[in-house]
Image (cartoon, helix red, strand yellow):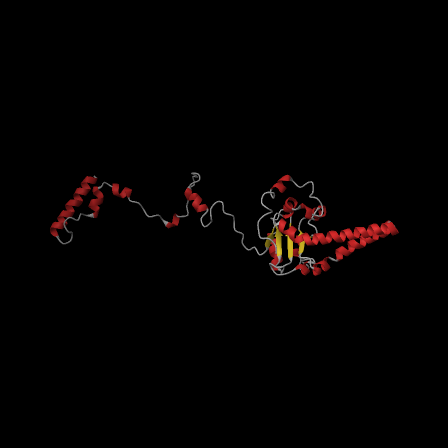
Length: 280
């Protein structure tokens, strides 16, 4: 049937060419005739342009990983080993060893004052008995608590805020640190302790306000809130309390808790206490 139709088309074209020579030049066959003479093979091999309406459709069969999938997955990045870039970070980070260096003068001053109080108490014991010594020690403790603002005014450069639970803070903390409950940030007033305002300063200045938790990974939102509320010299301790336990445990008020897992310490024992710039 196809051959018969092709023959009829060719006959019709020859008849038209004979009656009207200028309508169809010689040597130019009919497109229909050419298409039919190929018995449909050209039509079946002709590729169609992709329809943009269905460009988002993907095959449901998962054929495994391949280069095309990897390129689509990491398009616009530096590859599978690239670190995710942090955005909207307004605070800085400080390493445990840098914090140790900044706290060294304050710790030496604290130790000298404590030794002087012990000498005074021992002298009182020899003169007036235990009651006089106890009154001296309690008075010294009250004075040290009320003198934190005076210490800031006198030249102390670092204020550490322990953002863990109060029980963890009571077991052990960085020397000179005070406990801070992050729930205070949601209060309408009195977001910060009054000592903090004496340590407040510009970013990169001489004074630092250092926040730390257990591992240094959960304070980004709180540190950003500090900066947004005017505390521009806010730092987060890289590695947190665990990093201090590994790198410089001598700046703690007490030895690390026994319950601190070896895995938590091992996580911070290989990288120098975390990334980020040092203080000051």
